[in-house]
Each structure stands twice: as structure tokens, then as C-alpha cells.
Image (cartoon, rainbow, N blue to C red; front, side, top):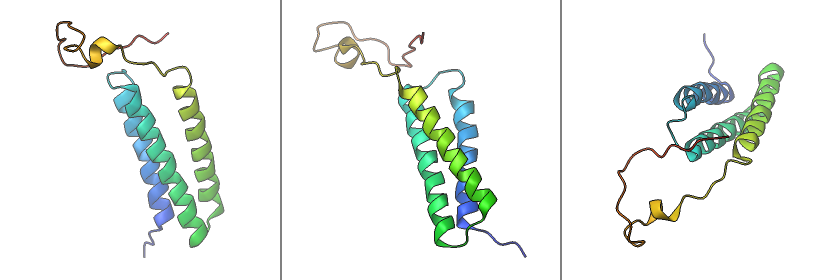
Length: 113
């Protein structure tokens, strides 16, 4: 009989979410905030997995992998957010108030150096 642990489901869901995050952000067609939000959500999901594991029955291999997953996620979040915070130009936020013509709505592409 198959036994489903909440901790295993949460850490697998978080890992699958990171794969989806990689697929959606590899061409940089989405904003930086999307990646920050997704990384934060999946690290918190892994933390929930660790809490569930410690509250029920701990499995050392899974829990060690969860801690490594959380550490990698924390490092990735810090690395991706450091130096990437840029304020949006005011003419994109309020073009009518500045007296400038409206720009076409769409994806703002920012070149990263």
C-alpha cells in the first residue's frame, strides 16, 4: 500500500515549481518580481515540508534534501535580487501626468549587464 506524506508532497511540489520557474524565466520575458515571488513561494513550501516532517515522522534523507533545497533557494533568491532592483522610470508609471504620449502596453524588456 502506498503511503503519502505531506512533507514529501510539499517538497516535490516545490521542486516541480522550480522546474516550471526555470521554463518560464529562461528567456527573461517576464518581470523580475515574478521570479522573486516564485522563488519565495517555493522556498516557503519547502520550509512547510520540513515543519510537516518534524511534526510527524522524520526521514533523514528527505529532510536533508529539503534543507539543501531551502539553502539553494535562499542563495538563488539573494543572488537574483542583489543588484537587480531598478526603479521604473516615471514616464512609464504616469505618462499622462507627465504630459508625455502614452506608450504601447506590453512587456518592458530591461537589458541586464
